[in-house]
Length: 316
Length: 316
Image 1 (cartoon, each protein chain N blue to C red):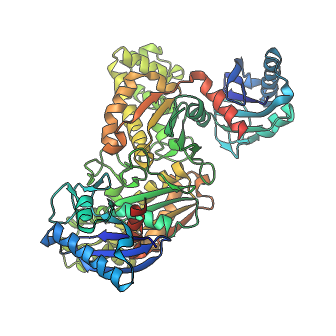
Image 2: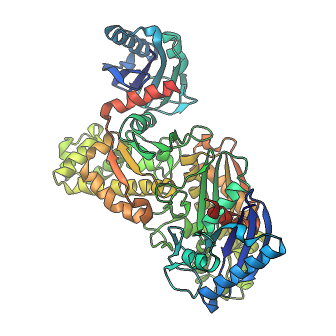
Image 3: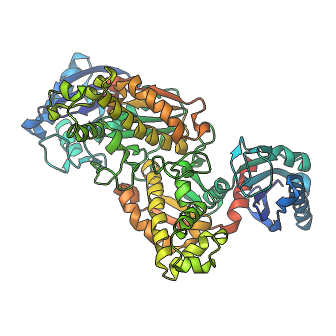
């Protein structure tokens, strides 16, 4: 039997899973990344955890054929990480080589939101559809365009980079260095940026109270929670975000015309307060025929989407 | 031997060609559409011309297996035309059924720019590439996304509708009824609209002289010609258009990451004065990796792209 390891590495916690060749998630756990102790410490800790998990599940670690990792930052050639968002680690580390030296197992990386999209597309809400678009709305926006059995990866692996579609000429600065990207408006980070910008000049609202005036504490979830309670200030932000979400999704629909759009990642967990608005606004941005019989679904794998998608990287 | 007829119907002239099953254009001609005499007159005239062409080329008309038509207007289900731009014909005519009644040959329709994109993708500048995007810049903007041997047509045939990707929230009104479409900015019509809007308040320029002040005469070609002569007013319009062209093309590159982008249609004939600017601006809108080894080509089929693409419709 062949086994594959999927790792979804985060600034605080790292999620780890072992899958068999059929894509069944056999075991999974979450550990503290302890990134402050350095990259070598964290990778060794992760691999030791994998070995323990294998032993507990009677898996011979020699049968682990591949490791895939989802990374919160830009990944080059599935091996080098441009920079780790919120990690005290160096730029341009070849994490793939480091992990291979530790584990002696072939290791491939991709951006964490791309990996979530991959997991949902293949194992989650996209399963059974021949034309799906998965949009992972997390710290960034990742995408997986899946047509007739294949992901559109493109000539250089850029296929599905939905988050860097430009929605505004000379718009908000994005983490990629360009301006006006979908991700700069509708990712969790984009939502928080917009909220902070507004909170700078309006402190008389439920959102400001909820975070006790500490902008550092603000998370996208606060905004959705306050909006659900009826806070007008937060509802306005949700309306602003859903406009860009509808524009970005609509653009993809006009180009790809899938049967289903799957929204995953933390922002998608906002649920109906965001999605009802997006559904309504989509009509402005999408050709009528692309909306016929279109399903819009929330991802089904939740926190496991990342590890399951990461494991898929290692199988390729 | 099987034969296929491709027809590119226009307000003034209609182009007609007969292809064999290998895609060779055996014979082609252009006739006056005489749309003023009504749809039945024009379709009969076109079919009689096909019969004459067949006879002259020793083609038994009974071996004509399909007819494809490129239509200057929106097409529903490959058979009904929502409206003919610049024709005195009714709305929602089932042109497919009418042509089948006249010819007794299966007839399929598509939008004229989509058909040009199809022709270039399969027979023209896209030939030999496994990942291509063809963008036909004519009265509208049509697209053909071709990946690993297949056009992306989508769940309801909307795939590749690049022209209706939104570039501006609540932007310029488009012929589709929505706002801010790529087509509203960068098609020949979009360029003329922008130029007319500017000419309303600035008549002291080479472009205004070139059309002797008659805004009805303005064509996109005038703008490019005056820009080439150094007319600052026209150069500014070219700059404006190339910004939107780069944004639209860049968005497609980030999603699809093709090996080649083929620009066809009348606007692409502007040549380097437009393309050099687009190439430069693309760097702002496209992830670096999507530009590696990317080729940007001008369509190769010229005026025959429409009839060759239309013939392909009939083969499907």
